Image (cartoon, rainbow, N blue to C red):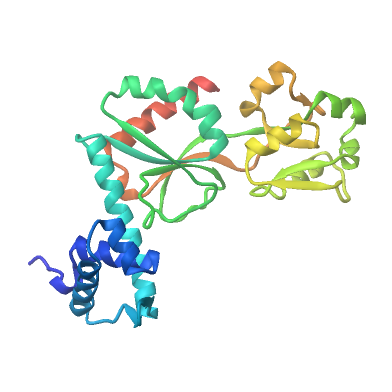
Length: 300
């Protein structure tokens, strides 16, 4: 027999929207203005919600309101639930057939490798809509309205299914002017120059120097949170960066970047497509997986 949630645990969206607006703005007046309701209507909806839950959500102090501890915790959950409902409504309206893929991407991989190829995928899969969101590190699919993610790292993301996309070769790259200034001729020369690194890969330079059989401390290191910014910093001569060759082909071809030394290193981590098991058969994801494998194969 199917279990039904008691009604008092399923308040109407009208009551939840009034509560969330008041909790976020800290004002019944501002919540009423935002929802195009009267102050008394918003106050009444909040009271109804409290009666339904049998919990006091706000402390009333003259003309002001303040969330109780229970109200604050509830507001966080309600806000996320309303966001998910809004996202789902937006997606179904954008594509009534349900052909939407919500994909998390790495910023540089997404803009430099994936985005230029997406028109081809969309042309081959009419009716599918792709929504892109940037994520730099692991996240919980249970709390994010995402179907899949393109991830770089070790194969250690628990609770997901993974498909290997590609490996990566990084090379020390810098501006032509910086290379001329330092006259790099041996790996040890880089220890004397400013080094640029990605905060999500703090050990990359240590690994590179180790492969070159060089011990000791490297030079001054500056950290950046994205490849786009570290690449720009390398181009303007701030320092030498370890950059994936497949993502800086245009800069190398134009001469904006040069190899400080032709000593590449294969990263120990890999690019993967990951998804929660329950989304495995989602048609847009299945189509994207097949297309992605074809593109990766052609790119090797």
